[in-house]
Image 1 (cartoon, helix red, strand yellow):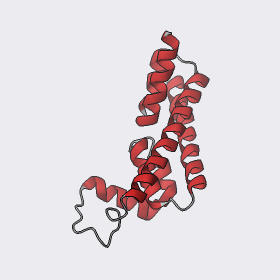
Image 2: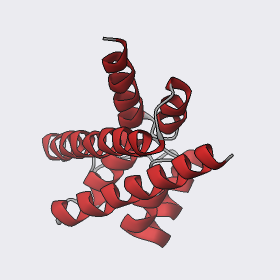
Image 3: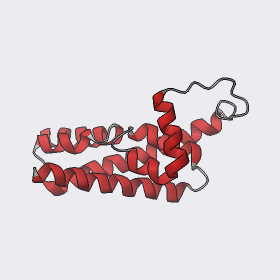
Image 4: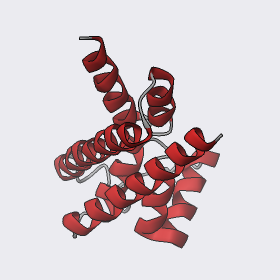
Length: 144
C-alpha cells in the first residue's frame, strides 16, 4: 500500500507543479526509469486535464477573454512575463517554460487560450516538453 501512495503522490505533484515531481520521486527512492515514467505520465495527464478545462472555461466565458470588451488591464511583472513569452516564443515558449517556471495548470490554460485551434499538436508539443524536462531533471538528480 505504501508504494501506491508514493506513486500517486508523485503523479499528482507532477500534474500540478512538475519541477517538484522528480525530486519527490527521488526522495521516495524511485529508480531513474521509475522517476521519469511516473513524473512524465503525471505531467502529461495534468496537461491534458487542464488544457481541456481551460478550453471549456474560455468557451464558457467568451466576453471575459475578449480583448475588445475588457475595460482595464492590469500589468504586473508576472503578466508582462506571460505577454513577452507568448508574443516572442509562442507555443514552444509556453511548452518549454511551463513545467519549470510556471505551473502546468497555468501553462495549459495559456495554451488553451491562445492555441486552441490545433489542440492535438498543442498537446503533443507540451507533452514532449514535459518528457524532456522529466529526463533532464531526473538525469541531474541521479548524477549529482
